[in-house]
Length: 178
Image 1 (cartoon, rainbow, N blue to C red):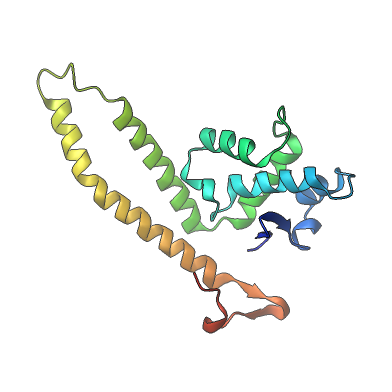
Image 2 (image 1 turned 135 degrees about the vertical axis):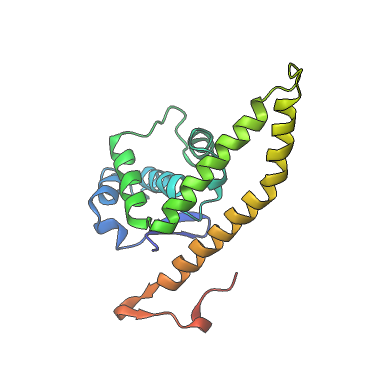
């Protein structure tokens, strides 16, 4: 799905996206000539939710801070109900079962990262916490390989599902090179 694309370092909404109520409301409420606020808010929606977003590596809280800082020019801007509704709609429209599993796996990985950051072995007199930590670290490689494999499955699913106008499909040689 390509509701939004990045063209010349600017997020652009497709004509299909602007038909959808939640995105259309963001676009129409900006009455300025160049629609800078609408473009920023749509960019915020994209970077917060799109599977291919560069910011997906961050947990939700950090992503909100980073995307707002990097994309929104207003210093006091916070996402309102219309932006949150657009985010929910974007999540709904792009979600596949495998994407849901991938998101859940990423959330679990964030929790594991937090565990490793906060676990304390200094008071471990019996050595049980230390041994558990060592065993868990040994398993991390398999976890990360599994996550990468799942990401490849989702990417393949997205690529195979792309459609072109007229209900046709892209041939293998027409797929964009990476």
